[in-house]
Length: 445
Image 1 (cartoon, one colour):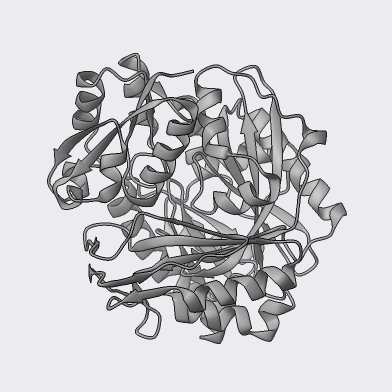
Image 2 (cartoon, one colour):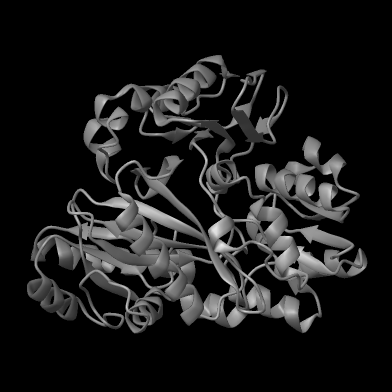
């Protein structure tokens, strides 16, 4: 096991990793920008290093500064978290060249799965269904229009190097497609430095279900069941749960087996998530692989009793999985609400500023993953997440009731938050029935 690692991230996930390391007896180095210098979690690390000004490009995205911090503190490994450099294959390669272990997949696996066109080809090779679409990136809007005519509208354009909903456009006819083609390219170029886009049939009323996996360096792979992440706005998840309320055990078994085939085909190591879209008939299609820990990983931890972050550390240090598939059981239902500093009644506009009131919920079955507190300032420079509220109960009915109670207890002010909209969603009859899809929030609110 490592003796010291550097946490190349901030906020809630940095605190989560520091806690996991403390339990394993691993020393930690926290890096921070000038904007985060007063963050309370920094004091929980054994050492801390300022890596630059508030702008992410000059701090959390600055590879030379992070590597320098790792070298001067003499760490053995770097944990990337999610966002920032977590899925940057070049960063993983630099770590390897500097003889620092990257706690995640290899640069080769990350590059392969980070290119959505190549990932589609890999899924096809692994005999996993994919949504009808183009085999390669599209060079012209005429090519896009030709594919759309072949597979039928509506269609969706996706950035080949994309993520987080950027570089994605839905088109319902040829005119809107031609406009969308250029806007998707421009956004992809700006966000990822790669303008390549491809086209797929757009599945209306689709559900987003993803499978959590762990894979070690000896080739052992297990899944830790699925999460339903259908409640999204603009492709950003808001509420997640496990198990999915919309699939049966037959589909669940086929889904998890398909996920493992993709991971093995990619020679993937560490934690990862294979995302699928399911149509109205529960037919599933490969979406992509997230080559990192997910924001919503706590719901899997709660229903399986497995610390995913600690297993990431163990696998990266060379330890083989002690988990066997037959031993990974699901217990109860877990739901997670993302609490963001956004005003849901003003188009989810950001609400940065100081938190003056912060009263955390508690009670049996309630978990709050957050770095925020009274006096903490929500920065305009970074993601607006305040924290993640997770509940775990024996049944879905009990889990919904517990989450509603916990949300009502949670007081944050004067910044706006997504607590009110989460309460509305949890009370909606269609959500209670488990009858939601990726367009549910935008149609309803």
